Length: 160
Image: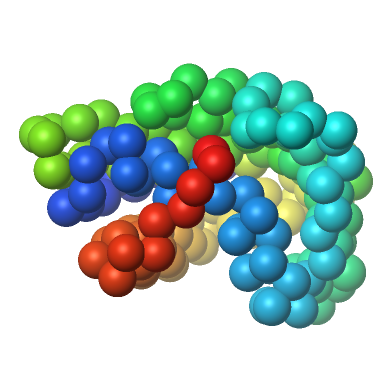
């Protein structure tokens, strides 16, 4: 099942990529929301091969995730592989400069079941596809407006 949406940001492409590649900041945010995340690679700078293990409650059950950064094309895109016990997903963040101060961000999530029970879950999710799409687009829109607010406040990250 694939979810995709795009948002236009009033931020230059390099600044958007900088904000999106603040992995330490995202780790702290995940921890603040009650999940557990830890970095599993030994890389000293951002790039292909970065990986994390995470644990979070999803739909009432404690789930474990393995995330690996498989593409890192500054400032154009990042691609992550995500694996759980019964699902695999790819998470793509793609940026296109619309002008010097405007960037289009496309975020795509493609989830694939790996077990029979996961296929059953996906079948019921397909019945609620419109609701799930609406929620996905709303969350990405909120995320985009948060990025713009962070940028306006000058909370740009360094070292990405």
